[in-house]
Length: 116
Image (tube, rainbow, N blue to C red):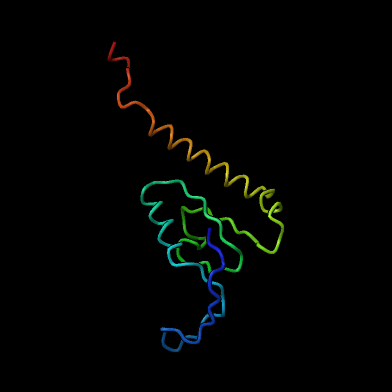
């Protein structure tokens, strides 16, 4: 979950002649690293970003294969959990977790038609 951590008011950019980006909320740096490491290990990811936080790195909605849902902290929490978008993404994540557990708990040897 990427939540508002630091409000950054940029005064300059490293691009020659570039204008600094507008002030915005930044998430913690490890919030780029942890989802990336989970993805490398093949873990199912459920990413929730608080509205207003910069959409950079893995938190950019155009980055595939991550599914990111945005949460507006100014609205009631029940409204977030009752959204169809939340239910779809959560159910997809649950299915991926169950599938991973099923695969990992299967016996290493299974009888087949050639074994009889």
